[in-house]
Amino acid sequence: MIPVLVMATALENSNQVKNAKGFGAVKIYETLRGEILSLVLEPSQLIDEVSLAARFKVSRSPVREALVRLVAESLLQTLPNKGTIVAPLRIEEFPQYVDALDLLQRAVTRLAAKNRDSNDIEKIYQAQAGYARCVEAGDVHGMILGNRDFHAAIAHAGKNRYLEQSYCQVLDDGLRSLRLYFKSFGDAAPPKLTEGHLQIIHAIEKQDEALAESLAHEHTREMQQRFLTYLGSRHIAEISVAI
Image (cartoon, rainbow, N blue to C red):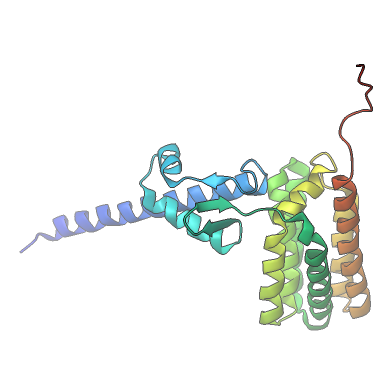
């Protein structure tokens, strides 16, 4: 018969191993996700499990667990016979992306104005407060995720699970584009974005469906125009080359 103390110690050690493994996977996931969103890991860059395991000083198992989560979020891609890469940024698909974002954003924001309750409003305000704290701290990664959480809270208030899921997928697909959007402002949040968030909240709170949808549309249009302006901008002064 195994002593109770020995059994308890073995169980505790087993749980510690499981917790350590889980924390390792979470830490790797969060670190890599931040590096992908901040473009430290470049689009189409090859991801090597062995190198990551050595970097984080873990076995390959938690690395694989982290990579699976990132693939599920469309931040990584697994290619046949080529391994795993950072998902490419397909600029040529940007017009299609904006169309999808605009339609879904208008729909979920209008539904939020129609169906929200007091608990939904509280959660939207909390998400906006979290975003505002990241703005104040100059935390670009936090701003990207905070903006996503703000709009996801609005989608949840619309109480249509299918639209919410589709919209959140589109938000996730555009996280790196949002990184370039913030970069166009010198890695600071533009006042228009923060003001736009508050205007949308007030329209939802007043249950003004038409205004909420209109503001959501303007929100998308402003992001689109700024992103296209950034892509077309030059970052060096005019120079003459003597031959």
